[in-house]
Image 1 (cartoon, rainbow, N blue to C red):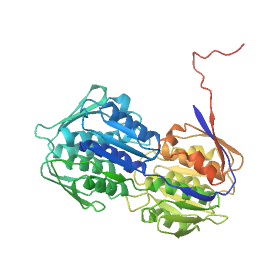
Image 2: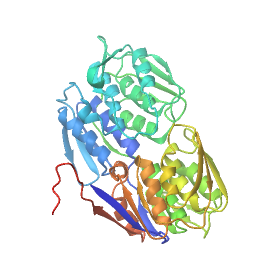
Image 3: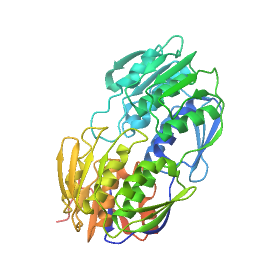
Length: 430
C-alpha cells in the first residue's frame, strides 16, 4: 500500500498539462468492440481504470497494443463475446459499457454488475430499460451476472431516459449497429457523450444530435477502424484549477477545451479568481483570500457533480459561508468528515453542506473514500499548514495520471510513500 504525503501551505505556480478524459476514453475503448479493424486511440490517460478496461478487452480476445505512453491500438476482429466475470468488472464502474458494445455487435452479452466508487445508489435500471426497448431479453443470474439476448440483434427504437450519462452512452453503443433508427430523448449532453458520438461517426456510424437532449442514431451494418484523439479531461483540469485557487497560486492549465470548463470558471470567478482564456489553455490567478459562493451540481452544462468535492475542499478557506447542494447523487458528502479533521467548519444536512470558511487548515491523517473525494483530500492538504497523509490513494490513481509529479511541477512538496500492511500472518520481531 501507498500513501500520499503533502507538506502544504505553498502556492501552486507554473504550468500543468492536462491529459485525456477518463470518462470519454473508457467509452471509446468499449466502442472499439463494435469494429473488426484496428482502432488507434490517442491522448489516453495512464490511469488504473484504463488499465482495467484494456485488460478486460485482452482477456476477451482483443489484440491490445500500447503505442508509447498515451496511445493504444485495439483490434477486436477475433473478439469473444463470452462472459465478463465480476473479478474483471469489480474495480471499474465503466465496465457496464461492455453491455451495450457486446449487445450491439453480437446481439447478446453476459457481464457482471460493475464496481467503482461508492457514493450512493447508482442503479443501471435506465440502461436495462433502453436495452429492453431495443428488443433485448434481460435476466439477472447468480454471481451478479446480467445476461441480455435478442435473436434478431438490437432493434432501433424510441428511448426516453430520466437523465443518465451512462445510460445515454450505453444505448448509443448498442444502437450504432442496430437495425433501424434509435432516438434517445432527454439524452445526456456531457462532453464525453459528444466525444463518443464523434468517435463512432469516424468509424462509420450515423449519429446526430449529440450534445443536445435528442440523439438520433441510424444503425449501420458494419463499422471500421479509425485513428482518434480523446478530448481533454474536464475534471482533471477543474481539479487543478481548484487546487491553484485553494493555495492562492497562479498557474497555466494547458491542453484543455475552455468551453467545457465554463461552469467551473464561472464559479471560480465568483470566488474572486481571475481566469484568462486562451485557445487551449486557461491562466488561473487566485487572490490571497477566496470569496464564498453557492454551488448546486447539475447535468451539463451545469456545475459537474465530480467537481463538487474539489470545490468543497477549496471553499474551506474562503471568506464567509459557502453552500453546496448536491443535485445528482446521494452520500457524496462523506469526505466532509475528513476535512473536519483538518479544522474545517462544516455542517451537512442531507444533500446540502454549509461551509464556514476558516483562516487556516492543519495537516492530518485522512482517507480517500472515492476518486473525487481523494482529489478533495489532496487540495486540502496543499492548502493546509504542516503535513497531510492521505490513505486509500488507489482511488486517486483511478482518475489522475501522475498527480504527484504534476503537483511537484507546480512547486508542491508532495511524495508517495510505501506503507507496510500488517495481517494476521505478519510475524513481529521479539
